[in-house]
Length: 79
Image 1 (tube, rainbow, N blue to C red):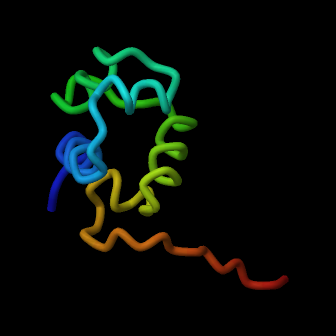
Image 2: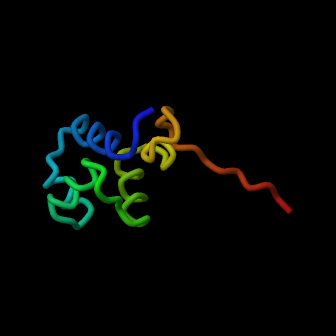
């Protein structure tokens, strides 16, 4: 399974975005995206959510916990 740095790079390239363009989506500089892709840093939770929503993938997929990119809905049982 891929890790976060590999996933973010893969998703960015698949969507034909430069690091600068992805940074603008998140309100960050290009060098921040570069550190994510090199595994030197991770986004704040808010930006992880933005990335998952933007690319239409689950957080588990984005973080490399699963190879299934589908966004899974958590069903909370009624009390």
